Length: 337
Length: 236
Image 1 (cartoon, each protein chain N blue to C red):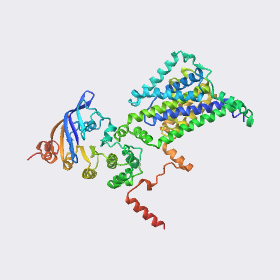
Image 2: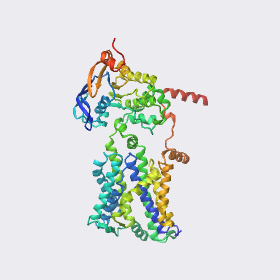
Image 3: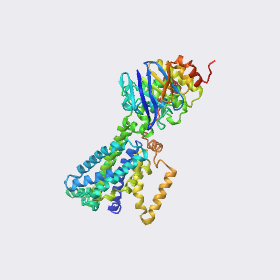
Image 4: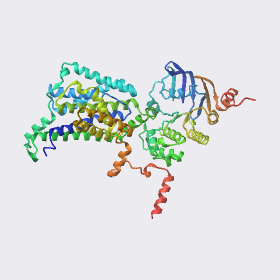
């Protein structure tokens, strides 16, 4: 038991969950057809704000992380006003620039400790370990207090991830989700249907930033140490790859993508410097074979059907409405009898 | 109902519309005809707020809509069937129609979908097929159906006959007449001048950004200049 639950494995699981949350934050803006590269920037805002609040203001961790998310969203409102009017590559470049500006600001601010970064950030696992001692759970089920702390952290992270996924799924089938889909398919046509395209693009941008901010706050309180280079250009590309690799049309794609891409470098660790080659080759192959990522909407429909929770059945009764069909229905009914 | 006064509009430093005046009376079909590049589509885009006029005024039911946002103009009661259809390819026919009713929240949306299906039975048969898999004519029907779902008072049609087989073109023009008979005002942009003049009450002829001729469609149809330039017939 203790072999499986060693801290190294548990940490990988935590990183996987945070990566999944970050992947969903980019998925959100992608679902309106916007390619933004600001995720690392918003993540760093969430991480620094959260970390400073727990370090300097000694706020409880959950509140600090939440405020970090809110601040990231507020920054997104300001950044979004000009940038969400941009399209395609221009938006990508502008948001990439934003990420770099934020990084340089954190590099030069005194309160963020410059290039040294912030260390000694209270860790979620540590806090939970203290509770474990308090409730006398040390040694329960032959698991020591430290491992319990890590396990509880993972459970909390999983709950947050589940909430984010649930939120995405709910929104997908709502009025807002339909607007997102229409904008992604053709923003011109969407505008002509009376959809306020700028508003919905902004909404997706801000929600994405909020999720990224939360992800950043969680990251800071799990690694206990952050510095500006954690949120560099490299990080954005890494985050962007999660939805692109796993499938950018469904929320589960980001989850699968982050799972594979978090695990892969660890599994390939024995290859040392050669692992990047394999990583790259895998991406090239995937893009050639499945340009929409591993999970697509069609594949998800098939999986849902297999699992018996068929999401949206094409029942002609609800789709075809004219008398012609009603006549056909009556006919087939009498045929059965 | 719709009034365009001295509107100047263009893209960058190219002026596509050089001060045009146009009026669409309630309940009528007005055709806007002209060659490629005359500014027909730009006129439509200016009405919808997709191109902002640099000068002039557009009023709809007495309300100035010149600087309104496109989605607000749709809410005010104008729908455009865009050139090239712009169907949502990955949504089903049914979903496309639902999206057309995006600005509405009433309970009669399903009734209106029924009406569209009755008007275009082929869409009924294909209701759960993806928009992108339809033929050109079916897509045009879907685009018209989708625009009607917003219950517009004024329907703008930008080249509805483009790229369609002659039989389908006739069908589309029949439908436009029906829509008009049911009380929706229609502004039609067409290169198929013969057909457009046949169903219209009034017509405007646009040439390089200027209205060169206007009046009742019947008159325009028999105007020697129009016959020579657009209908391919010399005046005897």
